[in-house]
Image: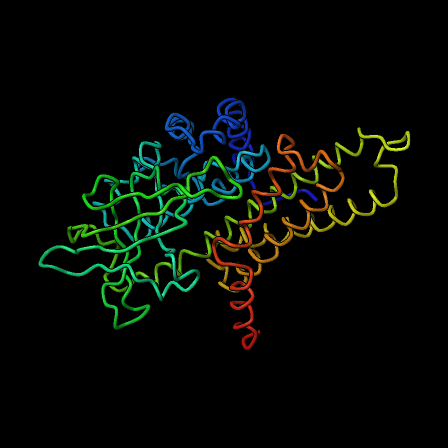
Length: 380
C-alpha cells in the first residue's frame, strides 16, 4: 500500500538523505565497525547536509522541519544498513529535551552546535543496578550554595564516549522517589566527568556505548534542565518519542531484511530451480510481507498521531512492542533463506540479526511495554 503521511517535500528530502548516505556512509561503514566509532567528519557532514536535528526551528540554527523529517532519516539509514551512528539519540531525543525543557540561553548555547554536528548529544539514565526502574537511580546532585555537586555512575550510554554534551538524570532529593529526580546538562570537559571503557556489545559495533563516571562534578545552577524535581516527569513525557523512533527503525530494518531475502531467493537455485519456486518459500515470504504491510500502516497512524500530540503512552508502547518483536521474527525468517551464508558476518542479513536484538531491550524492554499496556486495560 502506498504510504500517505509524507508530502512531496518530504520525499525530496528523502532522496537527498539517501544520496548523502550512499556517498558518505555506505563506503566507510565496514571501517567504522572495525574501529568501533563513527568519525567526527561524518557527523559534521551530516549536519551540513541537514540530517541532524531536522525538527529544530531556524532561530536555533535548525532546518525547521517536523517529526516526519526525523523519521525519514531513520528509515533511510535502516534501508541502507547504516545502523551504527546513532543519530536518533542525538536528534530525536537529546535535542528534543533541550527544545522542550531548556532555557533560552541553553537552547542558544547548544542547539546550533548539535544541528551542525559540532557537538554530539547523549542522555544518561541507566545505571548498573537500576535497569528500567528509573526511580531507583542512585546518582545524586547535592546542592552546595549556588552549585550542584554530581556523583554517580551511568552505564549503557549511547554516544557516551564521543558526546560533547550529556543530559544526566540525578536525585536532587532522595526522599521523594521519582519527584526528587532532576536533569542536568554536563559538557564533556567538565572536571570530574570521566568516561570508562567502551562497552563490547553483541551488535551495533560502530556505535559507541560507554560507562560514565561523575565524581564531585560541580555544576552551576544554570546547568539544571527545566525545573528541579521535575526530571522524572520530563523523562516520562519524552520517552514516547524515543520509543516511536525505535519502532520506525524496527519496521524499516524488517523491510530491508524482506527485500534482501526476496532478491536472494529469486537468484539462488536449489535442485536446479529458484528457491522462490518452492511453496514453503512463497508462503513464508507471503506471511512476512503481510505483517510488514500491517506494521507500516499502524506505524504511520502512530506517526500521524504523534505529529498532532495525540499519541498516548500505551499506544506507543504497543508500537514499540509489536515492531521490535516483528523485527526479530522477520530477520530470523529471512536469514534462514540464506542457509550457511546467513551465518557469515560478511552478509548483511547476519549483521542485521545481531544488531536487531537490542530493539527489544533499549527504550524499555518488551516486558515493560506489556506492563504499560496492561495497566491501561481498565481504561479500554
